[in-house]
Length: 161
Picture 1 (cartoon, rainbow, N blue to C red):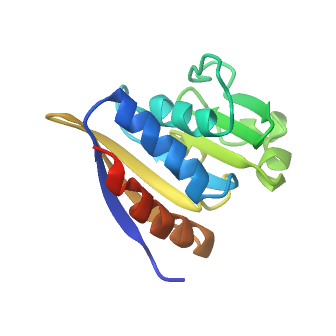
Picture 2 (picture 1 turned 45 degrees about the vertical axis):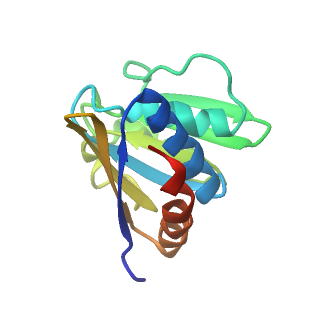
């Protein structure tokens, strides 16, 4: 597998949501995405864009206390994990997370470092950081599926400001 890396900048929240929409399309609505970044970097905002691409119109909040929020949508199934408060990666086993990761779904994981050693490998790892005007997103592939997705995203994201 060849490693693919792309760097995108989102000048505002709308641009970040647009990147999330395009990411969902590029991944063909399946795969595992790790979301890294400090508090307030925009991990949940990016997730909102992914969910909008699949037809979710409701609120999107980070599942900090429940650890996972499942979405069954016409476009597919999405699992949104937030592992910030996870005390031990084995807690994921008690949630039934192994089945969620085995599912043909799109799974987004905030704070994946907290599940290290238990989580399956990511197709795409995204690191978000605050910059003077908006956010910088560094996207790295972790699989062939992720590399193909990032190649598609690099082409489609040229229209995002």
